Image (cartoon, rainbow, N blue to C red):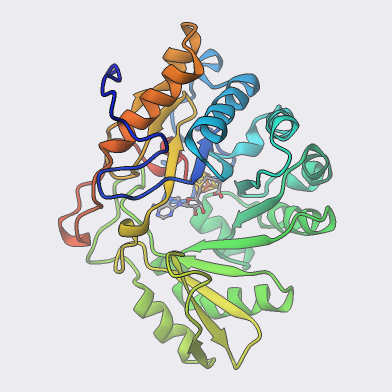
Length: 337
Ligand code: SAM
Ligand code: SF4
């Protein structure tokens, strides 16, 4: 761990390019109930010893520092699969008790959400992003290596019934599911669920991603355009990663996040904390600072905030073009997506 020394660190989480982090993503575990091929190895990631994981109280403390000292405006709980944590409701309630108006979002595969959506909403969860790559059970099982589509759909229904708003669907573009994309879109449109397609990044544990074979946003537009009329509809705000398209004249819009072919690193506003409490300013750089070590040796809020600022100042400009990109050591499931 590098000791923060510069007295000239900016008060907020700002890097040398002037980008300010406002969106904090905290991973709660590396474990998962699925094995999506673009993310996890077949055997799953190594289980972290329980004592290494941030506890609910530690997550609350880090959020306090992030919001109170560093200007973070939104927290997203992720993983691995955050629903694997039996104390997820406690994590949410702990944050909510101290931050009444803070948006708290969950990124999840929705397995087990059917039983817990109500309690999570009650604890203070604001919104949910649910990963769903296929609504055909056989295709779903092939890409996630688990036959759990029915559980995911039950989770989606429960999240909506519990009043979580919005419930958004994320689908990662893959060769195997590309021709199924129109069906997934219609399924989401019929239920009024916002859908965003995301280009796969070289963050799979199996290191099978390749610039030559990845499905691009342009390919998706060709496939969707063959059966529906898409009209460009801009972005929710100019720095939002998703480009929006009106479907068949609207009002339904689909989002496409071209993380690889149209990088949005220039307007990145994210900072990430891994499940063991390391801050990581960029998915593609292995530069991290161990906040849990500071926290567990009695470090003050100011010491935590200084360490966080120090690693943020070093945030790199962005990832290289797809063809030159070197995958980082950790995969998406080990960082927190
Ligand atoms: N298990 C939860 C889920 O799937 O929503 C949360 C963790 S998952 C790592 C967070 C997000 O990262 C998901 O939307 C997932 O689709 C996305 N993701 C995982 N691997 C990816 C990759 N190689 N490229 C792009 N997105 C990826
Ligand atoms: Fe699990 Fe989410 Fe990774 Fe799929 S994307 S393997 S659900 S962590």
